[in-house]
Image (cartoon, rainbow, N blue to C red; front, side, top):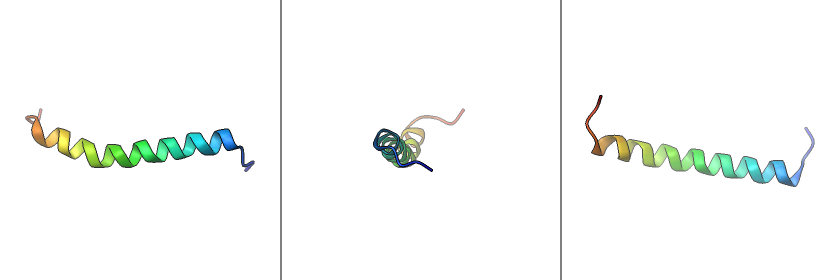
Length: 35
């Protein structure tokens, strides 16, 4: 594909938020009762 700095930045942001979500969601779900 075409390497556009804007798209690359967006991808980095998405991958970072995805990694954060993987770490934080189990902690959040673990602290509240399971529905």
